Picture 1 (cartoon, protein in one colour):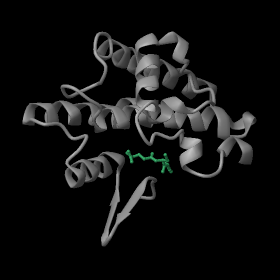
Picture 2 (cartoon, helix red, strand yellow):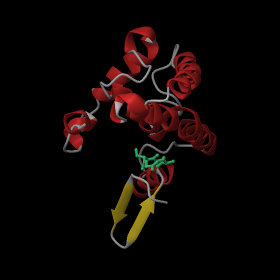
Picture 3 (cartoon, helix red, strand yellow):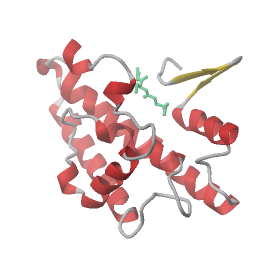
Length: 162
Ligand SMILES: N[C@@H](CCC(=O)N[C@@H](CS)C(=O)NCC(=O)O)C(=O)O
């Protein structure tokens, strides 16, 4: 498919972030929900994220930061910003009155799927100050043991190379 991320686990080579998250949850018995109902809710959020949130935020971040300035398509950027804003509103509403997106008590792969782009510092139409419940949820995730900012987890800040 020509995409990142790719997970190599022994003989298995997996692509698609949702598929990789499924593998991790299944293999570790963690982050994947305790009941069938919880699992369905988790995968509802992962699928939504892949379609409406991370895919759009990722494209916007690329268009707004890593394309040469004279090649940035203003109308596509404006249109996509409208779409991600609607996605941020969905996230904000879900996180009003609850700590985690899906599942009962704790963090799940639904949270990990949806949060990823939202830690990047470059402008892509997302400001934590506009979305207070999302803001606190990002802090909650960042406080989990072992969490690292994406630029600390993966070497090389793309804005340094732009
Ligand atoms: N649905 C895929 C999307 C992956 C994706 O878009 N990855 C980006 C980098 S974060 C990519 O490889 N883009 C290359 C391209 O679109 O040509 C997933 O969730 O893994």
